[in-house]
Structure formats: structure tokens, C-alpha cells
Image (cartoon, rainbow, N blue to C red; front, top):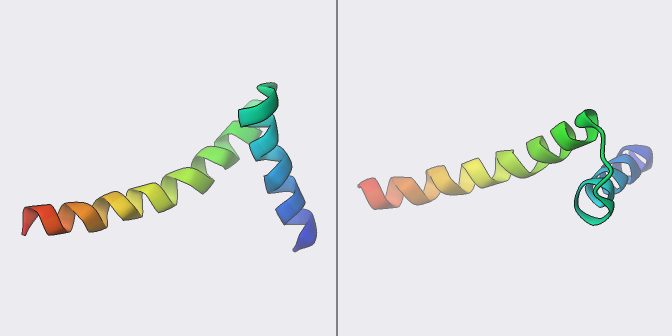
Length: 50
């Protein structure tokens, strides 16, 4: 578990801080950020629509 967390931390660092990430790292960071954001948008849209 600790290895996975370190991998994710390094991926986020490479994508946002250093800017030298490979496509696999960018995809991981996108998925990590997209799932919570989509959930928040869907919850917020439900209150706006109804």
C-alpha cells in the first residue's frame, strides 16, 4: 500500500511540479482527479436541476 501511495505522489509531482511526466503518469493523475470532480459536478447538478 505504501508503494502505491509513493507512486501516486511521485506521479503528481512529475505532472504538476516538474512537468516531465510520461503519458502513463498523466493518465493516472487524470483518473485520480477526474473521478472526484465528476462526482462533485453530478451532485451539484442534481441540486440545480431539481
